[in-house]
Amino acid sequence: MDYIKRDIEKKIAELSKEYPCILITGPRQVGKTTVLQRLMSKDRNYVTLDDLEDRKLARHDPALFLQMHDLPLFIDEVQYAPELFSYIKIAIDQGAAPGSFWLTGSQAFRMMELARESLAGRTAILHMPGLSQHEIYGSGENRPFTVDLKELKERKSTGTAVNIDGIYERIWKGSLPGYISGKFTDRNVFYSSYLQTYIERDVSELVALTDKLLFQDFIRAAACRAGQMLNVHDIAQDVGVSDDTAKRWLQVLEKSDIIFYLRPYSNNLLKRTVKTPKLYFFDTGLVAYLTRYSSPEILQNGAINGAILENYVVSEILKSYHNDAQDCLFWYYRDKNSQEIDMVIESDGQLHPLEIKRSVNPGSELLGTFSILDKGSVPRGKGAILCMRPELSAINAENYIVPVWMI
Image (cartoon, rainbow, N blue to C red; front, side, top):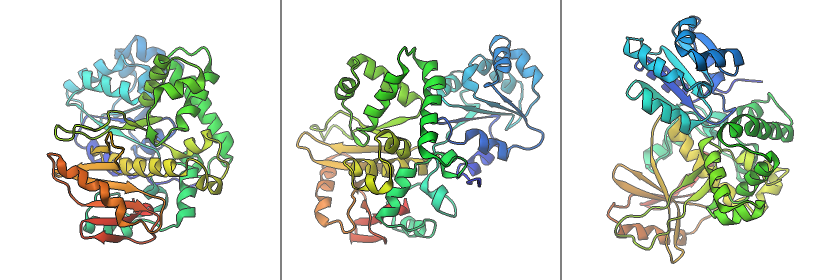
């Protein structure tokens, strides 16, 4: 079992020299604790609130808890004791040095709410996703994905080229370090245990569940629709719960970083756009497990092969920004005439349209919908088709063909 170096390590080290508090959020089992334990110096104290005694003290006497643990301090699973945040604020206001507090939490929304309420301007918040394909298969420094020819050429040297079979193997394996690193070798047991732990420890913190098997069925119903426009009613009907319950449970999945949404792009000049977001999972390996695809080959030829490829591409682009501690504006476009663009990135005052296709030789007709963005108020920049072509190419000077392995 080998440790896989994380792209976000550089940002953690840099920001620890500037901010008294660093908060790392992200889904369960993506390696937050492992990364920080590898980066921490010998003088940093470590405490996990998984320990019930430490958790009890942190919740009932946070001032004493902080007196018991000298700075610099790494507090793991800090979401279990939100009472600590006010006292961390006091310590920072009294002059705590940069890097004094490292915090991790598995409930991103709740952690960010607490940090913004109590630690605004005092903490750097980073989101750690699962492993990116650059971390697993690439080399060199991570770069946020952009449709810039110079950047795309440089990406060629940091990725590992694979064909369509290799891409679907990456999709099927997923992004969780426990399985990818070889620590756990039985994939079915790994994901089954992951789900049980998630439901027992994270979901029960957010909602009272009388039927945990029903919630697992709900996650599976959502996974069957990864990469598609959200239809709450259909998911609810599959499981036999009300639409309101389905909405609440989707919020739970979003708050615990199992799913995320791509919102539809619109502005005042594009009036016929739809309002429904598209649903994606952070980890495509979990989708493949939940939808019962037992091998990459079967997945590649299965009913969700296009949707899960799109999910993979969107999540990998998102990871490239998270790992550089950057935000980016991402959308998809669809109007009431069913004209669609899989992804739209806004960067430097321009809109960059992206199409995602399984094809090795995509045709120029795929660019037809890109011109719709010209009707909007933000100018259209260069676009790209992300596909299975083995090498970087171009349809014309304004639209590139980018292999998925290069993301």
